[in-house]
Structures are given as structure tokens and as C-alpha cells.
Image (tube, rainbow, N blue to C red; front, side, top):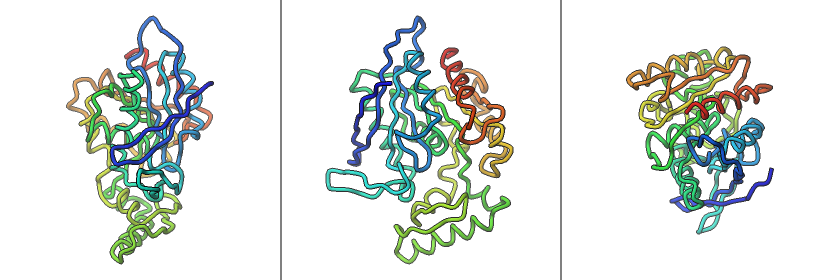
Amino acid sequence: MLVELVQAKTPDGLRLDGSLALSATSPESPPPFDAAILLHGVGGSFFGGAMFEPLTSRLLELGVSALRVNTRGYGAVSMIATDGGVTRGGAAFEVVDQCRHDIKAWCDFLVTRDMCRIGLIGHSLGAIKAIYATAHAPHSNITRVIAASPPRLSHDAFQLGPRSRDFFESLATAKQLVKEGHPEQLFTARFPFPLLISAASYVDKYGDERYNFVKFASRVAVPTLYLYGSVELEQGGIAFAGLPDAIRQAVAHEEDVDGKQVEIAIIPGADHFYTGKYSELTAVIADWLVRE
């Protein structure tokens, strides 16, 4: 597969990298968007994410170009070029709200390349970013959202979960560092899994309900497909327990739940990374696009 290495500049001046694979297919029935932006999860990058490989190939067959991108949260810790030098980025330092700028930059890039109908496809935190940006700062060219395994980032849920002690200890450490004037101090959090993260970023992600996508899912005004693996729903703890029903309840006022506007699909036997289930994941997404 031939790709073009590309770059976009965010409204706040960060330069992000990606790869663009152009479709040479002209299907009889046009797909619902010209190009898809593929958003990585925590610490990922445009050149990682094995689950995106077969999906990219299938998108190209359907006549959809595929833009795999970095957000400012790529890698564990990264240095990102700006007009004024470099700034810290990566999962350890990102502020999730700023994904609005990253997604806008990539949408604007596609528009300059005459791809004006855009779909967002995100995995894990990338799925939350796709939902968050479309709900809070919708780009006029986004026509579809596909959210694969967005977790529940909910302070209220975490404090009542079976690992509440780990959660409270990690959050208390982060808040204390911020209070002492060290927001960029790295520490090893124990919740939701061991990770090296800055105090400010931990408080941003886990300190309140800001990124609990269930609370703003109803604000997404374009057709949306949510995907989960049955294993992650059963074994993923409070971050995933009961999410399909929670999403249905959140968007219950929509005209067509599990239809055109909002659809939820569960991949049997799939974990959070769809290990061994890439073909099934790709098939469900492709079927939804063809039906749309």
C-alpha cells in the first residue's frame, strides 16, 4: 500500500504528522464519506495500531481514502514542533479537550485536498476524542463517526468501582503535585493501569466527568456507530460495564437508536484491542458504511 506522508498545523500552532492512502476505486454506490480520519488510542501513533491495517485496506476498496494521523497525544512522551520551537506532548502531557484543535486541523487538510465529506474513526481514547470533538466543536465536513471501544471516563463511576482505592490514591497524588506547583511532574499512576503520566494530565482525564462520553453522546448530530468486544464488556471493569445500555439510554430521544442515527455493534469474543478479530471488526464497519 502506497501512502503519502503528510502534515497538518493546528489552530494553536502544533505540527502533526500522518499518512494518507488514496483510494483509486470508483464504486457504483458512493460511500457516505470521501475520506476517513483514523485516530489512535492512548500513546499510539499514525504508524501503529495493527487493527487499522485491514480496515484501511477495506476502506480503500470501498472508495474511501484513509488518513491515519497523530494527535498531540501520540506516543508516551513526545516533543512536538511549533512555530516557536518544541512543546511537550504525548499521552503523559496531553489535555484531551485540545483534541478539538487536532481534529479540526486534519479535517481542514482533507478539505484542501478536495475530500469534503469526512468520517472519523477512533479507537479507545481516540474514539472518545472523535465523539468529544464532534459534540463540542463539530466540523461542518464531518458526516459520520465510528467509535471503537470508547471507555467510560467517569470520576463518579471510578469512586464506586472495585478499584476505588487505587483510583483515589492516584488522583490524590496528582492533585497534590498540582497544588504544590508541579503540574508537569511525572508519576506512576496505578489506575486504570500502571502508567507514567503528568499530574495535570491525570487530573484532566480522571478528575471529573468532563470526558464521560455518555453525557455528551446525544450532542453528536451525525450518524454514529459504536463498537465493543464482548470480552471487554464482560471483563473490562467499571470502564466498560453496561456501556451499550448506557449509550442507548443517553441517546433515547434520538429518532432511530440502533438504526440510521445511532447503532451499537458487539463483536463476539473480542477484547479491547480486537485481538484475532480484525476481520470481524472490519466487516461490521464496512457493512455499516454500505448500508448507510
